[in-house]
Image (tube, rainbow, N blue to C red; front, side, top):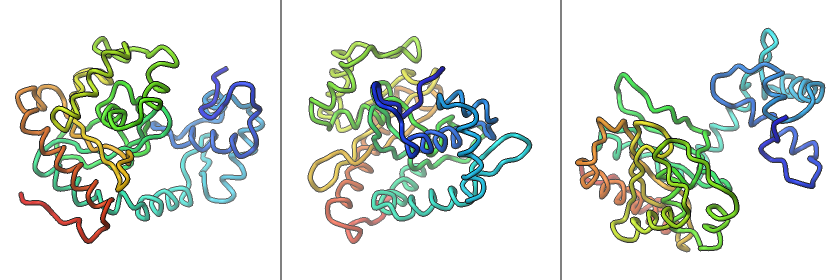
Length: 267
């Protein structure tokens, strides 16, 4: 049986932990999800999951149809309100839109959650293919551009907690799993203001990212530009990198001094 996301070794999960695990499974992509699938994802008994889903359905947080469940209108409304009310997203919206227009590639804003980066905004170009990333999706810190950009500005103790506490799995043949080599890659942010990740999280995808910090210099998130390797070429990185770094710097300045300072940049 799979251990749920919020399971902590040696501790029994309370009802709130279990409900949050069910919600996390409910919002996974490729829904709607059957009860048995949610039970497997959370590591909870089917009767427990069924009881929670019934409560969520009655309160509008889930919708049950034909034995499957998907996100309900109240949960969607809460998510939209949270994003609209977030200080970071109020600042990042126009910057991300401009960065997408200037680069022609998919742009993300991500924040940290434990050992993962969570995409909270995504702006896509008008093209036939789409990046598989999604708002709300989690990716590892150690092998993604947004994750490493945040690691590059974290205290060493927090970096060690991510890189040194357990083996790092290779997600592609190109994934760096040696903590020393990953730390060396993090130094790119100090050297040029951004870093590059080539096919280390997904095959055929290249990303360029830079960290966003608040007024105290603490990590707030990271901005990235992503594309397929044949469109976001290595030759284009020296042009795209400074644009990403500038966008991250503008959001950082806005977080430090307030919305008055956030204005659109020159095209």
